[in-house]
Length: 352
Image (cartoon, rainbow, N blue to C red):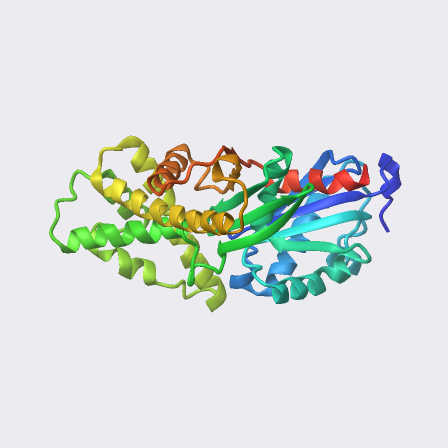
């Protein structure tokens, strides 16, 4: 058993930001002060399935538990460590990429029930972790955008400090969506470069072409699709497919770097514009739904964003420009740096 009282707390709040690249778990004390953080690998439920996703969520929480000051943990070889949360939990929130329906939520709740015991776990899509800035600003409504490895866009109404989703676009995994994500940007880059090469365009001066080819270790832009279609034969099929997706998503890094170093390159401009136009279109669709519902004008709403891609200034600026082109200008735009941390702090509010 865990000696949780030795550090003067009666329990902890736990929030898990479960993304397509990694899982971050934050443990906060009863007052919402962050005391520990842990990590695990990719946790996208739509792509990994509930069993593997829930297993990695538990791993992230256990990783965080090892760093809680004064927390005495059981023997790591015991069943308790592997099957039950080793500290008292006051509340828990898991925001999970690829958790897209009530059925998904119920399945994940069931998978986490034994681990968290009698404490109910709030299971939502990961985009709802972004609602904190909307609530803090007392905005009547807002849109939460996750644009990292994958993407999802959620419309949220502020009902007396409680975020209530009213619409969502995306979040169905890279096969059916992920518009505006790093994966989408990587696919767009490969397609644009390959098409330009096959049309005989001079790509010798394009930095993005050089960087993308270097990233996948090929000398010719024409080889990009075949190289990126390959699966690692040394791992199981599920792992190989996920690694391929992440390899394509990682191409967003050289795209952004090239856009920063060579902003006048028409090819990299085409790649970023095409991707952000699609993302802006998804956001604008939810704005139209808000208008039909009679919500306050978008100038009174908050856009809350998170993700390794959209946190890049050059990409965020392109998103704002794309939104402006379709007539959408939010009253406030907030970049959330730590969704799990903000979520853990928010969990503590009703307990204060």
